[in-house]
Image (cartoon, rainbow, N blue to C red):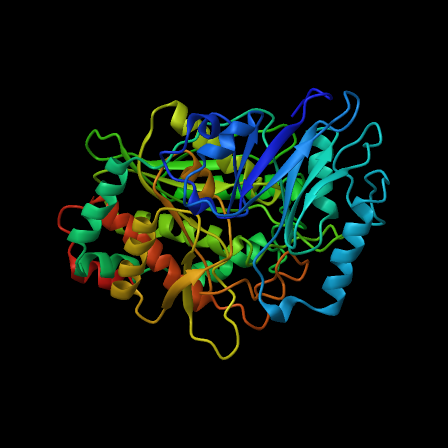
Length: 486
């Protein structure tokens, strides 16, 4: 964001994105920069706009910015994930304190010993801390490349998200789109055919898939699926092949230089239709600070294998859809939802008609002494889609305890920001509790990694897709045939 050094510009941070309604004044709507960590960010030069804020907005932060012409030009939002208190160890608190000290030390962005260098060239300029509260902040850096390097310096439970350099469209989900989801909710009933289809998702296939993606089986050679690492390209090629073997038409979507591509796969509607139901996960990963290894078994290998094994079951049953169905594996999620933001913008630019979108992110961790769970986002997303998923879970995976989670936000946010009905499925009805979150030990062969829970949530994701898209079995196939396939 290039700013005039003599003109202060305020960033208004609304602490609850849900406070911002569709009928906000134009001085806000035309200066919207996105949602970051459940907070909406605006750049406002006319302070009279504050008098027009909705009555629902009762708190926020205003930060005046004065950037020199030769100083930092890119703003980056940094955010601590919602984590369980069990993860707030003394070691982690020291890690956060060290990061804060580094931010204000005016030292240049440095590469720790053993850290993979992702960008080469001139040494990056020092970051500048613009804003900080208990669990988020804004940092100014020289450019996008430096912003990407900054993400490698974050404490383990923090994420970095570049703030756009110009306003983005403020697109609330249209009432007609919400009403269409409500219609699905009203008509939802148990369907024995749906149950027969989703019950056939293979636990053994899931186990083989995650062990390949993490290289626990020793066959893929994937050391990391970080979006800049060559291992992510191996994963992308493999995923594309697997989806195509399952009957989908796939393509790579390149979105930023140096990043692995999105893997976008499609099952066209049997008869012509513009309606599209989209389910997704992200296949990129993140490891421990300073370590190259990033297996991403849970984050988000678990969501990726959910989507992949839905595709396998589509192939196995031979079902066709009455709406278009897209299965997408995103990259760039760990750097700020970059792959999904690019694809959601592309869809909006093409006028795509998305019935609903469901992102699967972190499905596998099952905390000790807790039941298997399904968490739905408390803040970001379309409540009607979340309610639909909850109702579907009660029908087809009643073993899951369903509730809300403050863990936020995955690739569904990119679609929410483009005005599409969207939600996320998550492993817990509370904050993140996985001790291997953003850790180089995020493998599947460890305590708490529960493939049965992954399968249960995958059944919910698939059943929601089937009810929303509509489907037909091949001629001559009935429920008994589906049960024999299980």
